Image (tube, rainbow, N blue to C red):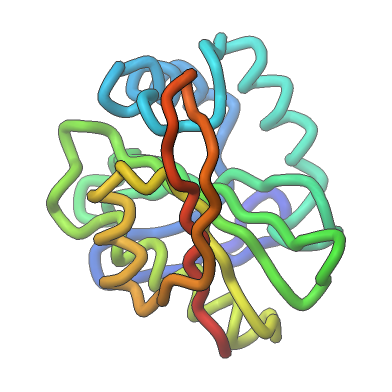
Amino acid sequence: MQCVTGFAPIVGERVLLRPLLRAEARLVIAYRRDPQVARFQGWGVVDPGEIERDLAAMEPRTPCDVPGPWFQLAIVERERDLLVGDLGVRVLSEAQDNAEIGYTVAPAYQGRGYATEAVSAICAWLLGPRGLARVIAIMDGRNTPSISVAESAGFTRAAAIESKHGGAPTTLLTYERRA
């Protein structure tokens, strides 16, 4: 199955990763605005128009076609063709054989292994057919579910930097997975 961008979806056992559609912006807003989800995210309050514009700008591209910009993939539960979250991916400008990912799962679908399966699938693609050397994920040290996902998907902690998030002191953790 090909998507509009020419990117063949990444198919896992239970999830499918494909470009996030503009029509899904309101669903994304709904779970991203949830205080428990937004707590550790790097974005502020987002509106559907902003996400729709970002998604429209991504339409002519494929994931990781150019260094720098993020590309949002939908995490879709295959059995019910249901959007359960999203996964951002970008090739780093400073190290073009490295990518960064970030992932979010709607609260109703957390704790079911969807994030771990999605992260494992994108890493298999990035480190395999895409030919990158390393994938990183940066997260707030208080975000234990995200840390658990990274570790379950084969990432190891590479760095810890003291920082502030939302005005509170925290540690930003960098996890990595190598080819």
